[in-house]
Image 1 (cartoon, rainbow, N blue to C red):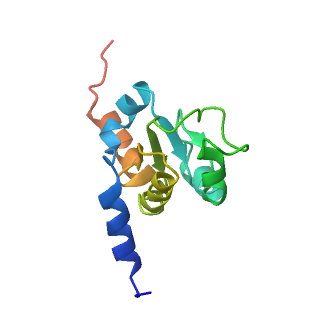
Image 2: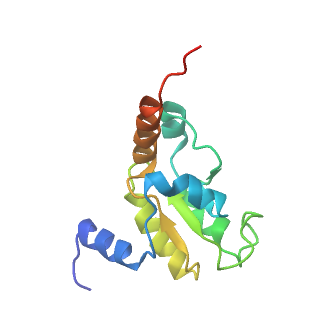
Length: 135
């Protein structure tokens, strides 16, 4: 077996993902029926906040909860075709995890480009750009 860096592994994983979801797209993707899965650890969720509409599945049990053939799967996982968007803190571990889900046959598994931090930044910028209402 040849040695590879984590950067090479990450690049290979991302090359397999259908379309990495941009933070600006997440709300529309969710509205279209995608299952959004927050894989951040409890400490990160407590520190930075929850992702509205996402199902929380920590990384150490991800494959068992999202494998349609697993007796321990989430009820939202009924087949192999659903769009699944994984979200980690910054968009690195979610890319690797999405590639593993594709290995399980979940061909529409992908991740959020930039992770929760990118989504949070878009949310902050959106709030700042809204005009103030006058009474």
